[in-house]
Length: 445
Image (cartoon, rainbow, N blue to C red):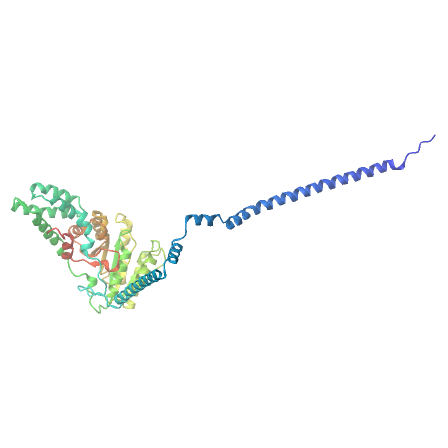
C-alpha cells in the first residue's frame, strides 16, 4: 500500500510556521519595552511634580495661620478690640488724645524746618581775624584735648598732683619729656628753663612750673609766628602765587589742598589746582571732586604721566587764565627713598622754568600722629626742596600735639596751618599764642 504525505506538514509549511512564531516573539518584546518605557517616564514626571505639589499644599495649609493665632493677635488688632469694648465717651477721649499728639508732632516738625531755613538764610559768620566767609571750625582747645589728657602735658599734670616740685622731681620730669614726642633738643631746652627756676628757689609750686613751661614754649614758637602768606596775598599781583604741596603717603595732602582751595575761594581768590599725583589710584578723581566743591579750576594729565610736565602745564595755564593761586599736588613718597626725593627736586626746577621765582611756598604736610618721625620727615624734605612751612594734620586724633614744638625748635620751620577736624573749616591758620594757651589750658588752675 502506498503512503501519501499530507502537504500541510511539508517542509515549506514548517518554515512558514517558524517565521510567524519569530515575528510574534519580536512584537511581544517590543510591546514590553514600550510599556516599561512609558512607566519609567510617568515615574519621572511624578517625581518632578511632587515638590511643586508640596509647595502648593504648604501655601494652602492653614497650619501657619493657626500658629499665628496661637501666638496672639497683633498689637494694633488688640488696640482696636479694646477700643470697641470701651464706651462711646471713652473712645472720644482716646481719639482727642491721638489728635493732640499728632498736632504737637506736626508743630515740632514745622519748628525744625523753620530753624533750618533761618540758618540757611542767615549770613555765614566770617572769621574775624582773616575775613574769610567760613563758619567757625573746631577750636585748638578742642583739637589738643587728647594731648592735655594723655600727652606730655597730661603726664606732667599727674606727676605734679599733690607734690612739691624740687630738684628730686626734676629727674622724673626729664623722663616724661624725653619719652614725649617733642624731640631731644626741645626737651633739653624746657628742662634748662626749669633748672634755672629751681636754682633760684629750693622748690617751686606747680603753678610756677607751668608758667615756666608756657614761657619756654612761647619763646620757641614766636620767632616763626607771623601772617600766613596765603592769607595776606596782595591784590593785583600780576602773576599767580604758586604753592607746592609735598609729604609722605597718607599725611593728608589731597585733603589739605581741597580745604585750602575752599578757604581761598571763600576769600575771593581765583584758584587753580594742578593734579601732580599721577601714580596713586583715583588721586586725580579725588582732587577733581575737591576742586569742584571749591569752585576752583582743575588741570590734570593722563594716569602715569610725568608729574613735572603736568605741573608745568598747571602753572602755565594759571598765567594764561590770570588766576590768583595755583595749588600743586604731588605724589606721596617716603622720605627714606632717595630716588623719589630727587624727583621732588626735579618738580621744583620745572616749576621754576614755568614761572620765575616759583614756587613761592613749599608746604610740607605732616601727620601729627607720627610723633617724632614727623620731625625726621620735615628734616629730609626740608633739605631736598627748601620747605617754607608745615601743615600739621590730624592734631585732634593724637596725644602727640607737642610735636609742634619739636618741628619749630629743631628745624626752625614755621607751622602755617593745623588740622583739628574733618570739616573744611577745621583747617586753621596757626597762631603761636593761641596754640600755647590751648596746650596748657587748665594747668594754672
